[in-house]
Length: 275
Image 1 (cartoon, helix red, strand yellow):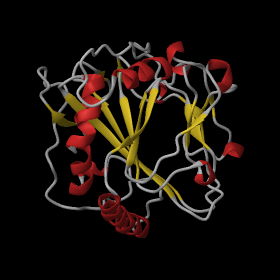
Image 2: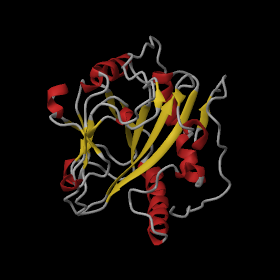
Image 3: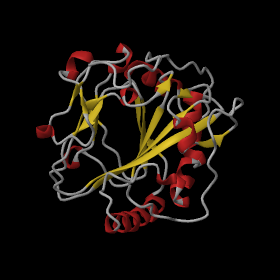
Image 4: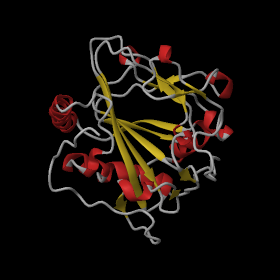
């Protein structure tokens, strides 16, 4: 299978970043993004700063679970929670993303991936771009470590150089996989180099392209592994089926075509009701 979104004409090819004068990232980091598909680790928050946000997330998840959500369900809540909105507009994050995408930045999505201790679920190897009704495929994903992440507690794994193949065929995941998502690329090592484990300290982040194969094992440890993904594009990316209306934030600069409907900072912290 190679089309999760039949009928939508999408450009699913990787275009290398051209930025001879980056402000924060180095020329070597941009070359790595182009060649391998990712950059990490990048220091963002101090330990006291990320500890404050971790305490916020602990409370948010407790309230979410009490209302019927799972640890993987806090998805797109920057529309409802001012503190998450503040993260997607954090200058230290945007400065790095700007070096890859340019001065105008749209965040169209956020998602906490919280693997609890002993969580048997895994994330099978997949490409993000296969799921998303966007064209061209130019999303840069920020993965911000809320907890320390390492191989023992199910850190993300990347397949270097797999992003250069365009869209890769996938299968629907089996129940036996216990996949958090629903797509699985078989034999991922045939598309790139040996997997790289994204070991991050809390407060650090990684960046990867939406065409890079990635996944993660189950968390067999006694430690939680939580990260917040933030998805950024430049304004020329177009969305189908109303995705441009749902949850976009014009984080920096402007959207000249007004394709992406901006959601201002919420004035509240609200737990939405499960649908």
